[in-house]
Length: 416
Ligand code: EPU
Image (tube, rainbow, N blue to C red; front, side):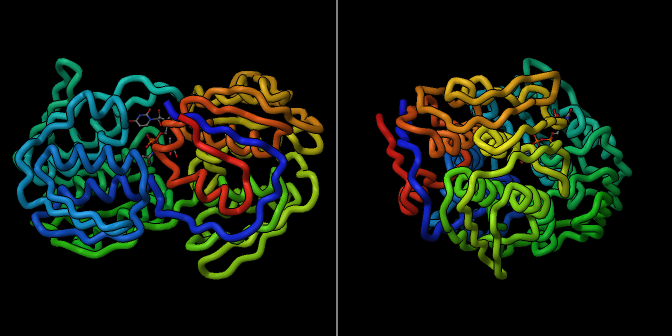
């Protein structure tokens, strides 16, 4: 199993190109199921999760052609309407095939995702929404079996804001008969990116970017070309790394408008940020100041940045409180950071952090994707060597992270 060996304390300087967003690419690949025509995608990130989604789609009969970050998908010969347990258990986002399959083919069998390191993460809202659109759904042998001759539009108010739930129902609604209104819809930029692709495919969607999506169903969708939006979490992760270690780095192919709150928090921590249309420069020369925050749905502070900011707070001047409101178990990095000398206590859903003068390298274990990224940041800031085990989590969602970091001066190496 691969590990990362990091020797901390190296200032970072240079340029990093940001990849396409994992959480936009995954639903967008599933949108390929909605049409018999070809989708031409670019800025597709090179990630394990993207490879897993592609192999799931190929297994269903999707034809794919890949050339670096460009990808052509053809859904002309889809003949297997199933997502098996073996795939769904490795990647929960596989649930995103459910809506498109029922909408276009009238049937789908998708394994129920099991538990997950960061929380229980049920998919009841996806199922409830499809039922409201007339799908007959049974759950048997660990599988969701959905059938509908033709989905029909409905007004759906989800109990909570759900990102993949909104995406699943939005894709389903594009081919339903009549009007669907999705109230309490997620407004994450990745949902907007998917909606923009669907419109390019011929879908009729109003309210894009708001919490009320109104969809007029059409008989069929057609092919389209689309560039996947920049990964705001990858962007934020590198910003935190520079904030924690110090340096001067310009992030290319990314945007500030999808990261508002996180950027404000970085400024509060003492980071100097300048930006243009498609770049952000981050400069940091001092010890960061501690920043407190609560995670919330977009446009609030993203849960996917919570762990990385926690790494920053560990070595910051002062104390901070970090409250996680989206997932019930997303503090698994805390024990590992404490092994590096951090002083973090947990009270319910809040982590209480006292900034320490320094962290000291130690062997640690990655527990999920963003926890892994936070350990990389902590290790870059720590004195001495840190060996991070189980970095397959990192490979799921970061495109060549260690190459990007070593190119700006980090001492980071993959060991097998
Ligand atoms: N929830 C339910 N029932 C549902 C759906 C969600 O109870 O039917 C709950 C969840 O358990 C959670 C909350 O609602 O407590 C929000 O979950 P959501 O459905 O929004 O999360 P998701 O769609 O499964 C996506 C991202 C996550 C990101 C969250 C929150 C993708 C593929 N995944 O997950 O990304 O943390 O939204 O922003 O888009 C990551 O990239 O590391 C990651 C975990």
